[in-house]
Image (tube, rainbow, N blue to C red):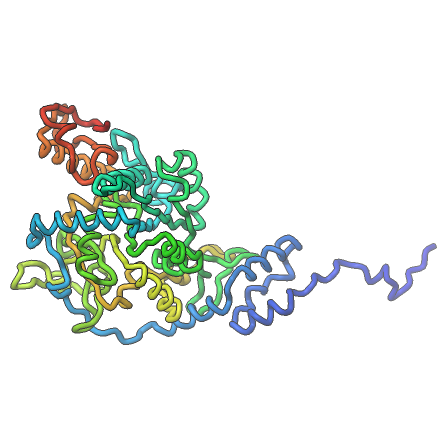
Length: 491
């Protein structure tokens, strides 16, 4: 018979206690009131504890804490009343002369030929609302060519380089640098798409990818929401994360090294975007301002778009969202012009000086005020209501010592692709038709003819960007020829 010895090692055996969290890291979390991130430490496997430690260590805790405190603390802060944008700040289509347009076009092409322009593409979004998990730029809107948004935009850059070379006696221009901001959700897929298509003909060192940042999602009292027991829930920091991402990745320095002085910035989901538009660039240089934005007129008072306003009499221009405007503001009429008083829609087409981008990157980081968006956040308790911290590209405008707006026609430059076909607006079908109709007008203006087996308002022709950037130089290709819609016209 075996006798059990009380208090022996055998009797005390059981599941060993887990090691405590790293003390230094726990103390740092306590400093910022975030120690609850380790609340379920004892229940984690060794592998999960390693993942949690790495996840917490990946956060810049002082910066994250500053952003959370400043953003929560700014809620309800006084803001000057909004005023309509002064007429002197806008170049409207009706007052623009042919001489103005030609002068700006030549001046812009000259700056491009001298290597002074870079292009930044905001491409962090997935095509979820389009029914796709791919990056939006990969989307094919159904054009006769089957080209993706990325390819259309790349070919517009190639065409511009040829136009700039033709305007330059030397016959050579440096490639236009294209900086593409992705997100953690789109980065790998975007890079693979460009590799698979050999950068659409652009040079390898001409295209640079960089990621926007992410920030923890927080509760209303600023505490981290845990997506799993070993992972903090995070979300992209908004398209205004552009500025800190450019700074942290040292791409502002890269631009300066390349001799860049001006930066064109736009969103990927616009099928008609005139990437690196020489006319807009020439206007921008002519005005001598720190930043400028293209605008379109609101289609109708209740259109759900952000509009430009002046923040306080004589204050900076900025954007207010439709949800921030009361009903009376949306319908007010300017008696001298007959337009809505608040009519200039923000369409995410911007121009900056490189000097101003450096100033903004430092200013936004110092102030650390982000917009708080209440959303359903994935958490260990299922989806829970919490706050995402975001900045927007237009947040930079309040730092601008000078700014100008440049009106463009919606039917020529703004065909957003945001919603799946079947929605009432901003669908691939609506964007495709806008492009086909515009290019059909170019063909007719160049002396060509169209035939069609369905009503022309339902179809049209597509002109390859490699043939024409904005309807120029099409006479030799179109005059006297007949094209059957739908089709692609290319060399």
